[in-house]
Amino acid sequence: MAILFKTTAAALARWRPHLTAAFPGHEVRYWPEIGDKAAIDYALVWHPEPGLLASLPNLRLIVSLGAGIDHILRDPNLPPGVPILRLVDPHMTQAMSEYVALQVLRLHRRDIDYRAQQAAEEWRELGQANAAERRVGILGFGTLGQATGRTLQALGFPVAGWTRSAKQVPGFVTYAGAAGLNEMLARSDILVCLLPMTPETENILDGRLFARLPRGAGLVNAGRGRHLVENDLLAALDGGQLSAAVLDVFRDEPLPPGPPFCPHPRIVITPHVAADTHPPTALPIIADAIRDLEAGRPVANLVDPRRGY
Ligand code: NDP
Ligand code: OXD
Image (cartoon, rainbow, N blue to C red; front, side):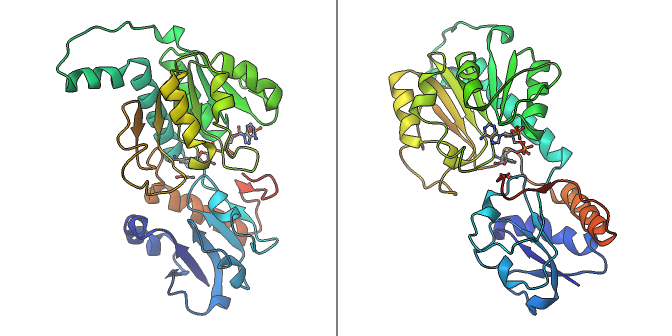
């Protein structure tokens, strides 16, 4: 019984020390040295090459090494019927809450302006709203969105969440679908994107959406780079419809150096680190899922590829 492991070279260094101990009884094979493909039962992957998974004839489970599965679903030749597991790890959920809280506070407390003043050696007080006056809207109110919402609410921000299907989340105002989006945007002084990447959500952060936010709103995108129409963001910042943006994810990663984003006075960039997968906590979750599958028990957090997330 063998496990295929495929991630980026940089991430592999974080995973490798933990892998053999996590799966006693299984041989772990590191892509591209995967040996006899027929021996591979499980594939733990991040951005697998299209066609790789379909070439494994006895594959029983595909595990995403992240919360998103877009990097798997982009393969047009996925093996039909092989279940796909996405990572739901409380450590990652906490990390995302911390990241978004940091960035919302950065926008709320005008940190970008104060850093610019510091660089210009300028001492000047800018006005400060209360957290209770700064309404935050979260696009994508699932595992990460709701946990983040709770953290922001504890800091005093009024938080609303937007989902695909209508749902009630105790303590929050929620909106759903295209009909709910307008209302949600109109009350979002800071908009946070924690959506999965699907055909419906691609390019959602565009000029038409920005125009429906209150003038001077801030944006935090920690979903996927393809949610954002980059030229529309730059135009909205130039025209003042948006006051600032924090971007963790990009169409091309690593982000090529230089304009338009590096540097930009109103854009803060982080290198896709909002909620890194943490091998010591993620591996026991994956090992439990494999044990459940082998014992014929239901496996938590399998995704429906037709839904796209
Ligand atoms: P979940 O599946 O738990 O939540 C997704 C949410 O998005 C749900 O509320 C869902 O609605 C909503 N949604 C999906 N499609 C639409 C749509 N068309 N319109 C409105 N709402 C929609 O995912 P997670 O919270 O675990 O993760 C979200 C995403 O965060 C990941 O897919 C990934 O892209 C990104 N991510 C980024 C990281 C980073 O480091 N930057 C780290 C981890 C994840 P409903 O509730 O109705 O299903
Ligand atoms: C994820 C990510 O999907 O890190 O987990 O982006």
